[in-house]
Length: 228
Image (cartoon, rainbow, N blue to C red; front, side, top):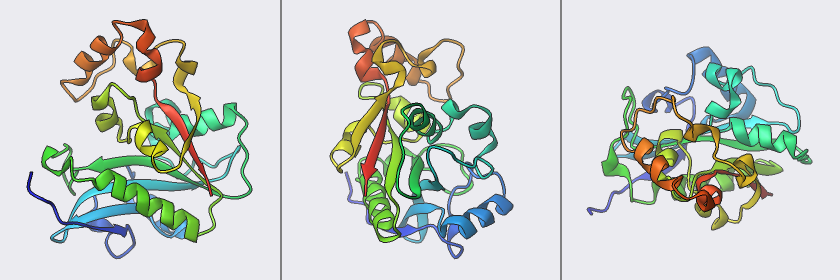
């Protein structure tokens, strides 16, 4: 694999138009996010092209204001990468001394004005680099913690579709597990039939993973928390 050179930078008012914006509803929402939290997250630029992004939200727990969340995130939190961590944090009655930096979604290989993931940008450590930059930012800007969804250990395509890193990657960066989907006692909502996935591989991976009920713990995503 040819080495890909890239630079990680915050997504700011000066560069956000080069970032894929599928997850933001409109420029008015983007502007309010800038006013609220300063940046929209982080991007990876290679030869002036943004090849990946991590979207972040400033939230307060256990209560939060969802007015700046995407419509689908307000309608059904489970469908949104930051949604289930927020719901799980509330159910676990997690409280923090100040604002929390929430990781919404990673999009490695999703270029501006595209609606698919280009696999040539995978395997270069971009996701981990975005994670590291976000941790540094949260520490420097007095956040009390970071919360995120740690993706399934054995359904890797779910992590790509949902836009999350495997939970093991978070653990390697100092995060700890606060909760598992369905307490790992049953299969999570996203494994149920009738859900349309753009990925042709995810259904096959889910079916293979669920052949053994002992796999539930490895199928389920996790609430990851880093106290700062």
